[in-house]
Image (tube, rainbow, N blue to C red; front, side, top):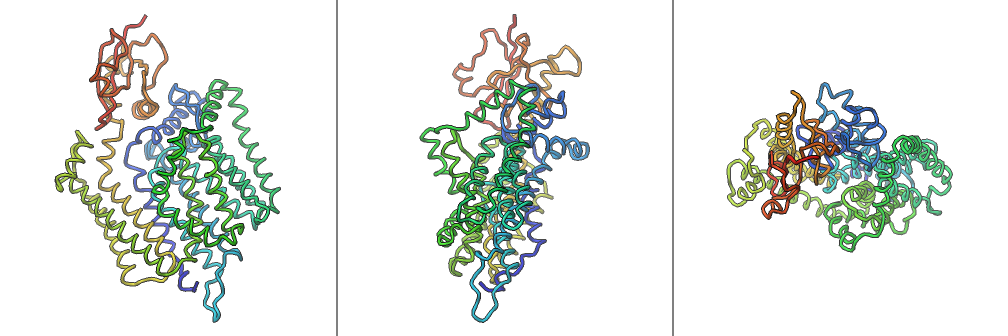
Length: 567
């Protein structure tokens, strides 16, 4: 390792890349489906309700005994402060910027602390010229952060108004805490207590168990944390006290909600079905691309120093998630995203051990791969607006039935500028042939970010049409307003087979709440087009259909507003 290979990545480049990554797709769209809209509904319920929504999550009058209240607290606070200027939906998403920033800072500083340790340093060159400890640590920190941004599977999840971004942030904070504890035990223990409590208050037991297991696994007798075990157990005790500050009043004031919340937690743990147990083997390779091969290489290359803190601490975080997944009844992307932070750190420590030819191969693969993805985005845009290529245009039309394409030229110009940025990056790599070790991770992170920016600029209106419930909610509100006996108010409505996503969307967009009053004559039913065609939707022989519709270009689900006889 030579000093030129650790040349500093310009801070402005890193900050601009991170800003483009998180801001694109976060604003200017409606919340989509269940995960994106559910927690937004709990935030609005806390502000609009009688105050109980601050302690336990609700969607209007509907109890939501799952996850924890922390995301609701933070999001509702942003809506209260910034909502009058930004709007409720946009204000709630400022919380995503907070969680994203906490994750980035934790990854960077945690890796920087580990990269400066003696065990991680490269061999000194016979005649000098090796990098300084500070430069080498900064190189690894930059690389880990860029590789985390380049991870394909986490992209959409980080832009959702859900518990996932917060859970990732607190897991990253726990990783930083363990690294910080090696030189400043008091500060590290304080951050670890906050991280563990944050994980629990974000996603309850499914969120905290992987991080708690990682913390305990980090206490290997040969690891650098073993002498500091009393600080770690002290942090766990403090975290438990913080959790009890919410647990005890919730159990006493809302026993029914707490009972349902306990059942939700217990139902997450058990022996999964065979197909579900094998699902991670199918999903994780693409979800965690391109960091998992590099992380595996790091473990192999550093196998003789496996208990060194710069390998063992991120590996313990990986093992915490890996041990948890087999005992979850239905693991999925909320658990998969927890692999990204520790694997990105391990992948960063793999790069200094790789030969130049292998690194160049990865560079060229990134250049070709993301050049193709950027080209495909433009081809899809041309097919949507200009009907060429014809077959692609027909496929898109089938998925966006009813959508009227329109071109916003400012977004096209911005997309062209983003494409030129990628061209400049390609020229930089091909013409200048830089020797810096972060170039490959920079190419991957830039490729993912620019592709995402192009998708948002060129495709967001069409995707928003397909996935948003706003038009359907407006139609239902108009019908309920007509049916109401009180001018300016909506009629009562009950739910039948209506999922959490539609209920939350109706509440978010038009403050429509489902009632449990059996005397209410109006019922909103969720069914499918096939059941309607086969006459199997049913509900009541004497029910009359007042309204029938669907969400955007949804080809399967159908919603009916019925008038039913009541006793």
